[in-house]
Image 1 (cartoon, rainbow, N blue to C red):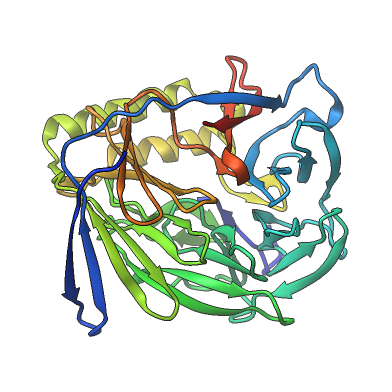
Image 2: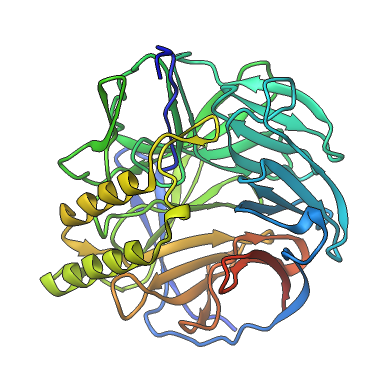
Length: 426
């Protein structure tokens, strides 16, 4: 740890509706669509197409840690195994097509790959904080080029990446203190707290990315303490931390390249594009629930149970070049301190997750009976109608949607072995 250029990385039949036009502060008219309060129950019908991932299977399907799965327009599934540092591609029947990726410093190697996106034509883009760029591979897994991040060369940040349909571009959201964001910092660069959570379009056409803001999502209050509890070279590393029961930023990309997102405690699904900003909002009359001491205590106990049940080998903490910098005991103590010092907001958000299908439907996961449980999943049609809701427990949010009704789920068996199950929604 004597190298001054250390790089800590954190891994952190449809119902009637009413329409109102409101004028936002930007003078842009927003269409407010009020969806009905009464639930109309749907029964999902999933037909299994194939599943991949097995300890007893071929070498290519022995997954270590499935980070991301995504489809291309041909229906091929791409699996990013962050532990094995590779991308595996299978065809529409689950047959092996090819794999690519390895740790290294050369062109096409993964130095610190943190996110994957698949473009419509089958190209794959890997966000790599170690290379400070986005490595682009063709549909056969052959490395094409890297698009540099630009900006301050001492800092690199990669958030969740989604290919923008039909474009040579990505949609991304990354912010300090946000789950799903990978951060690399060199030479003790101070981290400036964010004031919003921007959702951006990243253009891949040049040698260096250009980005355009699609929406400035709300950044809710953060916890008072910004310390991670980690010290490197005598310097304490800090980032903002969200509150318990905090407001998540849930989003998905629609077929026309616009974005559906939720960034508040209320039931409000906003639609935005880069030219207009937010131009439509879907609402349902479900108010957020005030946080009580009972809610907070139950969440604290749940976190303690989960921590106690986590084996040491799964407590990796901060890594550098794929090597853990902390012992499991140190990571366990730090997580225990976080639980003991939890701070929480005042309301439990109504929306817990959001996804978008290839044909433009929006899936919205509402909170369940308990503050940390998932409830029903609402389905909103591309033209803004309430289709109905899947009852709580019938299905979870897919890890990826694909063409022609394909959906993928990541499953883990009792031994911790991961597999990917691809089904077709009828």
